[in-house]
Amino acid sequence: MSKHDERRNEWVSGLAAAALAAAVLGLAWPSAGAEKQAPLSWPRVSVAVSYRVNAGFFKRPAVLPWGDTPGVAVDGRGQIWVFTRAKTPVQVYDPRGNLVRAWGEGLIESSHQIKIDRGGMVWLVDVGKHVVMQFTPEGKLRKTLGTPGVSGCDKTHFYRPTDVAISPAGELFVTDGYGNHRVVHFDREGRFVKNWGKWGTGPGEFSLPHAIVIDSKGRLYVADRNNARVQVFDAGGKFLAQWVNLLVPWGLWITPGDEIWACGSSPMVWNEKDSPLGCPPKDQLFMKFDTTGRVLELWTVPKGEDGREKPGELNWVHGIALDGQGNIYAADIKGKRVQKFVRQRGTP
Image (cartoon, rainbow, N blue to C red; front, top):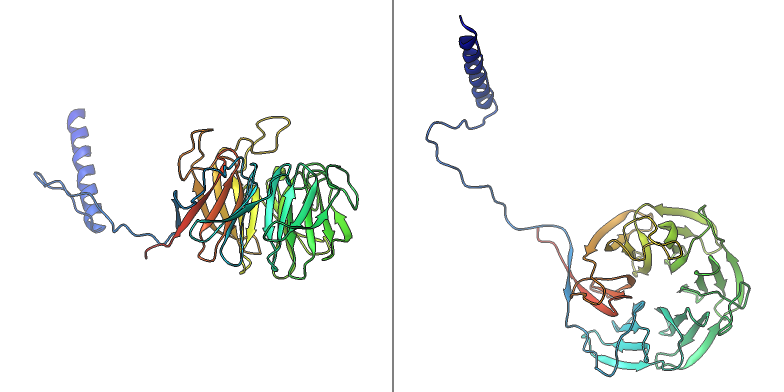
C-alpha cells in the first residue's frame, strides 16, 4: 500500500469516528445537500435591574444656572436638593422635577456636599470656607461647625472638609478630608467629642476621606478615595472593616434599609502627581453594598467628553442620592448638572 493510500484511509477512519461520536452525543451530522439552519434566538428578557436616564426631568429656569455640581440629596418628601457651584447654590425640586425654591446667594464659597437630617434641617459642606453649616429648609442659618475662612486641625477648625453624616440621635460626623485626613465627631449641640485618623494606608488611616454615611446601628462608612476603598467604623471610631479593590469612591448614600450606594470610578493608577486619584476617571459607575460589604448591584454609565456630555453620560460624578422608588440622582462636576436615572426592573 502506498503512502497516499495510507493517508486516505486515515482520513476516512477519522471522519467515521467523528460521525460516530456525533451520533453518540445526539448531535446532527450534516448530510450532503442539507439545508442551512436558522441561527438560534432567545426571548429578549433579563432579570437584571437597569437604569435609564430621564433627560428632561428637571424643569430648571434659565435664570438659575448650574455650575460644577458636587452635591445632591433627597428628603423625606421626595424633593431633590441640588448643591451647585453657581450664584444660587441651593435649588430644590419636587418629585416631578419642578422648582420649589432656591437660595444661598452670598453664603457659600465652594459647594461640596449636602445632607438632610431627620428633622428636615439642611447641612451644607463648604470646602472653600472650611465649614459645615446647618440651615432651615428656607435657608436660615442655624449652626456653624468650624471657623469660616480659617483652616486648621483642632476642635474648632477644619481644613477643606468634604461631607457630614447625622446619626438618628443627632450626633455629627464630619470627614475633614482634603487637608487633615480625619473624621471629627460632634454631639447634637455641635460640641466637639473626638477625632480619629491621619494620612496613611493602614486601617483607620486615610488618603482623602471624601464622603461619609451612617447606618441604623450607628456604623460609619467612609469613602477613603485615594486609597480606593470604603472603611467601616463604630461610632467611637473603632475600625471594623474595609472594602478594597472595588472602586474609587467619590460619593456615598444610604437608604432607610441600610443599603449603601457609592458613585465613582473603577480602581486606577494616578494620572497626575498632585491630583486626587481618579482625576480624570477612566469610567463612571454606581455600586450598591449591604452592610457587610457584599456587592448587590453594579451599573456603569458612559463617561462624557468635557463640554460635550450627552444625556445619560457622566463626567466626574461626585454625588449620589436615591428616592423611595430606587431612582438614582447623580451630580456631576465636569458635566455641571444632576441627572435622574430611572430604575428599570428586570423581566423574568
